[in-house]
Image (cartoon, rainbow, N blue to C red):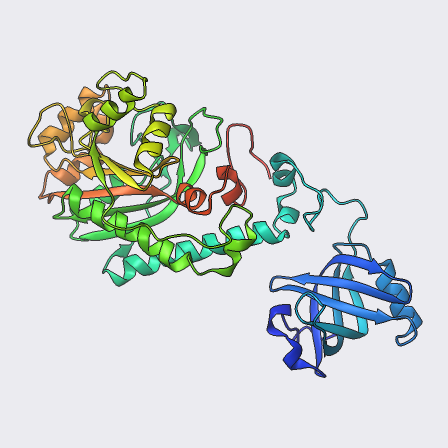
Length: 436
């Protein structure tokens, strides 16, 4: 049977009535009504009903269709017939059925969603979990989000770059690093492209972005943490934190706009049957001082200079009710590369982009003075000598610059109202999961 003429199920309709076609995919369901047998075939495009009437088709063909186990891979040649009651408004009257690969009878999970499965069970058999309609649409949306992000930056004159993921020094301190053996030396999986994208600001590449993996050896075991994630990072020369905050909020609104009319949103089962509203820009901005005051009004006390707890973020999310920025953070709890505020010595230009459910991104205007950067590194208990490769870029004309990093999975999780961040990663890596 020639696969060259294969058609996807969503390429066909009742308008193709009478055409001879070839379709191929997996046996999704089978229904035996005695005199008539229905085989539902599933491919990437959707579902197609294959109908066999006992007296109208070859006996061997009828028997083969009944024998083939669910989730087997088959190719079917036949004629299209319009049928309103069929899943896609048509059915296939088969002339040939070829079993390309027969599935085991006992399946690790149910692809029809009639029988539920725990997330760990689904992730153990992720190849089959991806055959489910709901899960398929999550990753189609993920692909569209990444394409929308690239389009956004390319249209605005940004240059896409790729920085190393094996590095010699920590970006933000050594407590969340994965050490690896790099020939005769110790190295680490990169926490962020931060140091390298800043170095590029000294090259004359004024506007860069990267979409790539980051690695955090944090021991969190929550529904919103991963140890391998995908980050969108930008760096812009001759820019302030306000400049890149504007880019960030415009990007988020752009992504929502590109996905808002995707019909698969209604298949996710997360309350998006009517779609979602695109966030309005500019997003509200509150200072760190204002944030801890709002939290204290709820009865939870945070000492000035402490990071915000998960419960504090929850209080703020309920209060704000939309995307918002927290700005003017204490310098002591932000990375060494955050530029100090010109107005107060104890705060810096760092910002976090928050969704009511969780933090999505963080950034700042960066230190561009060699002397101040070196002093900041040492003030964090790090050795400036370990960062000479990075510091050298600041000796020979580093312009003022700013940037941020945005978590792709967190953006998807919040946008699609998914409960667990592992749902939006093909093969997630967390504290307990290293395979598949």
